Length: 244
Ligand SMILES: *Cc1c(COP(=O)(O)O)cnc(C)c1O
Image (cartoon, rainbow, N blue to C red; front, side, top):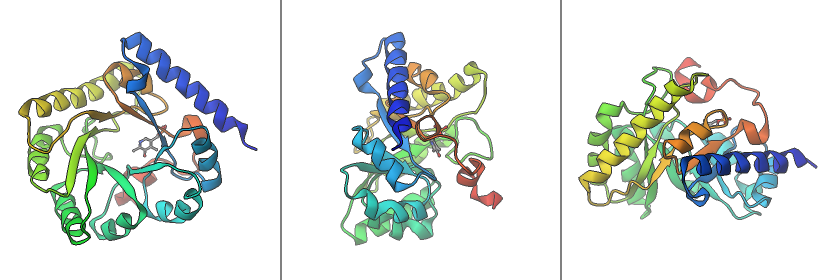
């Protein structure tokens, strides 16, 4: 048995709690999402059994491989990876409730067409490239509002918030600047009161920077390594498929 997962989740819960107290926020206002890329279904189930039932994958292939095994334990699945338009149809087979990585009009348009055809709706976060690095997906901050307005007109896609990866840096202040960009965008968009658009969720912060993200207003932190251990592939494999 892998008791490390339960222990790791406790450590993360304590970190979330401490960060909320420090920031004067209610710990209940921050959800832990488990980023499960490369993790086997059996190990994911151990985490689900601890009561942490919000999980997300980056690749459809992994969603598909683990889908049947995970049905035994109730949970909710989001998608946080780069989504190619030719994979939309497949993704919609697996009961994903939210696409956190909606980052371009072409994707929204194709997603809408397919959802409309299937008489379905889906939640989405707009992914913003707050670190402005070419290696990260996401729409540029200055184009995000325009994208939100256009997607808002598609009645199959319900925008619930924003997501970012941010900069990987040991310098907390540089990381913080990325999260602030996302928070500011959230406030600007909320102030526009665009019909059909909700801006309650801010998905930011990972294993290494969740405290900073919580201080800057994260409502969902996405944690992989700190719960499941190091992954066999570098993250570039997931974040920029163009390199492969
Ligand atoms: C892998 C991943 C995470 C989790 O990163 P860790 O550093 O392992 O906690 C969060 N968000 C996205 C989009 C990811 O791909």
